[in-house]
Image 1 (cartoon, rainbow, N blue to C red):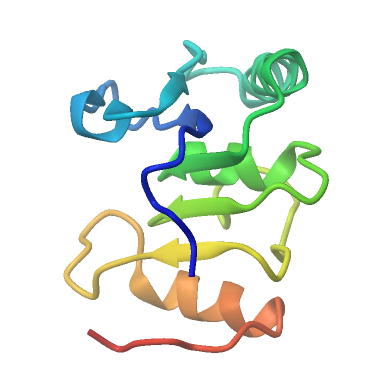
Image 2 (cartoon, rainbow, N blue to C red):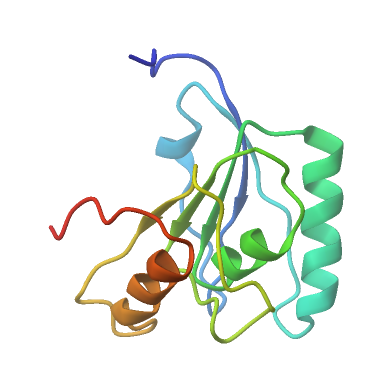
Length: 132
């Protein structure tokens, strides 16, 4: 069993429609790097996110909505991805994720269809864990 109190370094790529989430709870005991990514230039966002990842070598990469697509399209080696409602069909070219990735998505999401995450899980041959 993992000790969840271990300090981890995270790169959070969570930009969506100009909304910047409150990371105070995420930071509890962790170092969070949250690079400012341009909304209008996906390739520049990838460049910035990759540089942030390369500089800090985090333990995990967290991406939400468009940030999930960014996380999927940068080179993270064997580091796990945690993707919240990833908008992968709208941005980037990645269509699969690695086995140690986690997707969190609600059927009630009215921005990114839940079916996109189901398709990503199938594409990646990942087990479906929960329907709750």
